[in-house]
Length: 377
Image 1 (tube, rainbow, N blue to C red):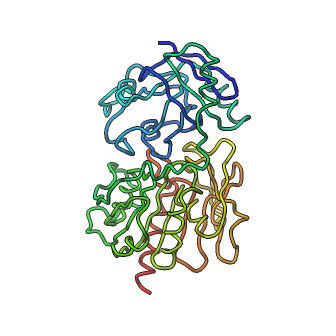
Image 2: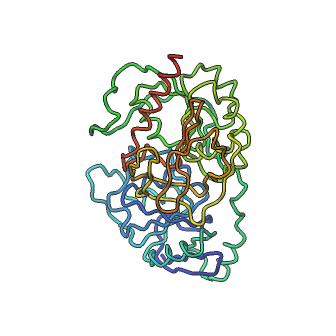
Image 3: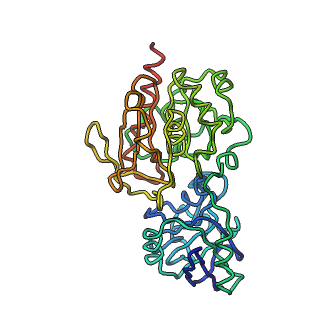
């Protein structure tokens, strides 16, 4: 079937439709990862977004339940150069076309994704529509312009779990990594994880470190978290603008100094706000598994996975309180911070990256060390 991608600035791309027949709406962003498309589909941080994948062939290794980061896909739509109608992998249980059709995700393929990505890099993230039912480009452009902007929208409340639950499953991989070595041991630490849009591999990594994990909704009060007697609190990734999540920043502020805290992605941004800082929207965001990040203390470079449209303004943080630990080498975005006196550190990127890279797995070990140090005081 024929399909059209229309952007709010009037740019049109025509191609072939796959997945679900129909229309979808959202911010159009691009992701530069080479593998891991199913993990991208199911990352709650992509809620409200149409994702363009720069790798030219997508779908060739199919899908399977083990690679999900959530119970269902969160992307609004998918844009690719070539969409494979078959899968060739021993782990595949369902071809990607059927998988996305099952969850009503429209796909447009056979377009010049290189030209589209260059357009977004030059002009920034913009609203768009994928349609396989409307053939009039002008009507689709008008629809794209009518999509509500996501700035100022609290999406964490939408994607978060509705009730508290326990997570006990570790990673599915048997390959040796820096953090393996405590598997099969009884849990030694109780971590309460705020779900702002948490990915399941984060939970697996915490379990691998020897943690008993309790996942709580985004709106859970600091008092209710402390009543669970945690050894540490984890602040997850999640979609959208951090500034509307005032309840989260306030709860983090009340938790600081009472228990060790480790935050990533949206959790990092919320900590920035809790510390009195400001956030801002990036021109086209960071999305991919190949972003170079520099550790400022050691000079070491990590290759990291990213998925965020917002960032913390480093100049808005008090240097007397906050140590900046990581920066992005592509654009000098603040990628990590640590409080100078309180047991608190965060990174903007995703250290649990699945299927990779694995350069940042050490951060989970650092969190364990911080909890041990705090317990010993």
